Length: 108
Image 1 (cartoon, rainbow, N blue to C red):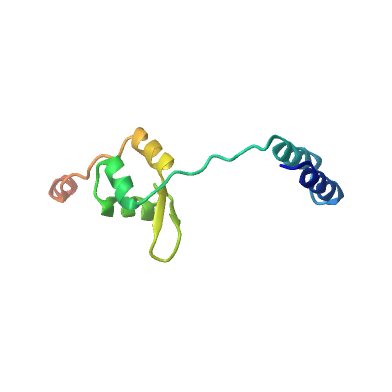
Image 2 (image 1 turned 120 degrees about the horizontal axis):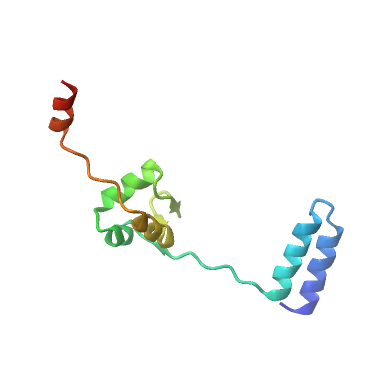
C-alpha cells in the first residue's frame, strides 16, 4: 500500500469516534503489513459430492439440514467452501439409516 493511502486511512480512522482503539490499531496493522486474507476454495455440489463420495442430492440434503453451508451466487448457482466440505468429511459421515421395517418391528 502506498504511504499516501496509508496516511489517509490513518487520518480517517483517527477521526472516527465509532472505532474502538483496539479496532483502530488492528485496521492500521493490516494496512501497514498488507496482510492478505486467504481466499475460499469454492466448489460445486458435484465437486463436493465427489469429495464425500456421495450423490449430489445428498449434498443438497446436507445443505438443507444445515450440515453444510452453501454460498449462493444467484438463484440457481450454489457453491460450497471446499475446506468446510473436507472438514465435514474428516468428522465422518452419519451412519446410513436402517431399513424402516426394522424400526417398525422394534416399536411393536
